[in-house]
Amino acid sequence: MIKNIHTRDLGVPAGPFIERIQELWPPAWGKQEFDRPLGVGADGGHGPIRYHCTAFTPGESITFAFSDGDGTHTLSASGTVVRHELIGDFTLGNRVRWALVIRWLHDACLEDLFDNFERAAGREPKSPAHWSWYVRLVRKAFTRRAQVTRSAA
Image 1: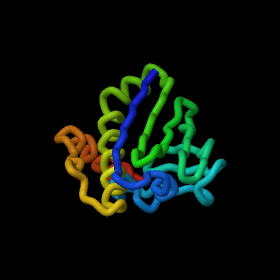
Image 2 (image 1 turned 30 degrees about the vertical axis):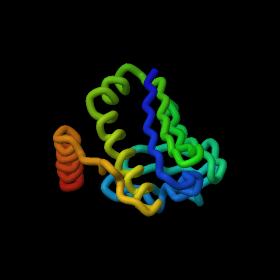
Image 3 (image 1 turned 90 degrees about the horizontal axis):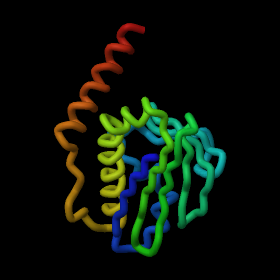
Image 4 (image 1 turned 45 degrees about the horizontal axis):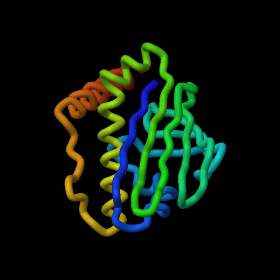
């Protein structure tokens, strides 16, 4: 079982940011798109990560299940705090991928998103997210792999 939690105090009511997830999604992580307006039943994701919305209470929380059925991630608000919780019961192969690659990318993406939330709340983050050397290296490797795949097609 993998559990990964990120929180951020925005200094203003966090509820309105739940439904602004697409608008404030960091473009560096692939556009977050769905097959219909955000709500229960919407299928989509960002980049190669696919999921569908299983629960949505505007101003409170939104939950997505990964399309492969391995877990969920929930964005929720309580007072001025926004919280993202990923829970996964991944296969051994996916646990290894999580530990070596995905976790670091996921954490960087969430911190970028929370920075955007904070800026939209009217203030600059106290400690803006910075990608580690490892995140930059993995992103570069994936970008090169995608370019090679596209040119071979």
